[in-house]
Image (spheres, rainbow, N blue to C red):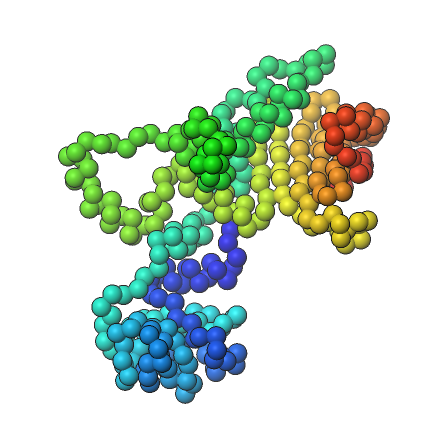
Length: 342
């Protein structure tokens, strides 16, 4: 979910809850002076350079470090090497003078570390409700209302809780209503017991549990959503799974991508967003539609597993292009390809 170097540092710190010590950037530590990952070393305070900044001798090297202000010349600190790249970094294990106010990782850092170590329960967003988006079965003579289906898809992803914090900002700005915000999973949790005797008895237990297990701060039903949020931030992609109509599963993917360097107008296009819908239809077989949006317009790729289906898609592509043009959407290219070649 998070970049590997960040995860490794968070894991190491959360296990010992020690402050992060990094030599100040005005001193060259590029040689790393024979330090090894995990190595435990002693540092001797030589002098205080300024408030909270000390000159420390470590393995015959003189380093400037930010340390607790109550240390003084001659004190010895126990350090452990956490990383060598991109910068030499230590954790503070102990000192000759016990710290009057020991530093600890913030609750947020501990929470992120705990989430990073918990297996991702699912990498896709589920439909809000178990029933299909379209409740009436379609037939050969009754095609689904695509406008209604598009709106339901939008609502299903929007109300999934994945964008809850962004929606809170919109609510504060007045662009999202309270009723809309209440539809998201974060506001669907059962209320906590407010009985005074229960509250008084469990206060200490809850506080201890939150310290021992940072994940206890997040209700169990919401933990997969928070994991999905972190995963989406890192991978820049979102997966949705559900049923478009009865007995018809649909997979939907949205991701950010960079256009190929060889593509015409690459410099002007910039980054683009792509969305793909995959269906296994009773008569047409496996079909998929990939839409790519950038500054040059919309690029459409349709693929299918069968030759007959590809022929049908090819003959209907001009109709699709014309319908999009009527709605002011510029189509830069269309392609019908064999399944899996898009």
